[in-house]
Length: 368
Image (tube, rainbow, N blue to C red; front, top):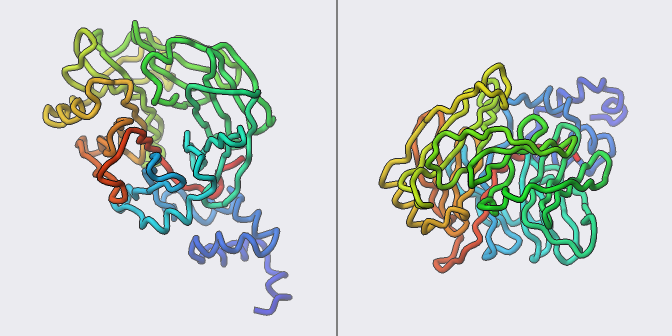
């Protein structure tokens, strides 16, 4: 096409023409001119040409493990296949071999770069990133949660009984008082995000607390749990908008037993009243009990070290993972069935602890 004609095309017509290109070609066009670079990071352009019901992106379960150094295997949960290893290496290689993947949220990945005392927040599809320096030096922390928002992101860090909160809009850190009990058995479980709050379970006695990301205030939301015989509990927020439904659901996955030993694992759902997650009239409803044979395998995996267990929501599934085991136990909510995801084929026969799984749904427009 004559460049003079191309340059005079109305923007909406140009957008319509470009939407027929494969997503890979669209990403490659980013380097050709300034306008293309920003048009493909524009949420309006993506929502117009790629509605959520027909998103061109797959959703992945991402594995991080010391054996893989800077390589993060991807399992396509839509097709049920592992991504070819060489392709995964070329896509996910933003850091040095000493970096560690700590959190993922809404298409963004958060890495720890210990050699430079920084965090790297990275968008895989747009190949864009931002470095976040620690609030002070030296700085150590117990756990971190990345929260991606419509107009930026927040980083929640628990360190030395204090909360450090980074906001990408202000490019600054704030410090708040911590809540000590959340560390009892949550060393591998991140906070779950819903409507401006992070939620955590605490034990002895078991309850659920929330942290207001805007005001930095802690609050006990539920002091009444599904059962009085919990040995451990994990939270999952299910975002059903991705399944074409409306609203969100809160689940508790917990072991039921006595004297700190679980005899079964159950799944409960919170019935929300009036759309308010913290309504005192909300009730817990038992959804599922893990089949006995599956439960025996899970217990043999964690050796009753329940602090190694962590859970998250991914594409209609509740995933139950163990820090020392390379497989995922997942529950398909729509089908009400339990399954094991087999270990990564690239994993060597001899492996050690350190398995961290993440839900990763690539989004070109995930904002910094």
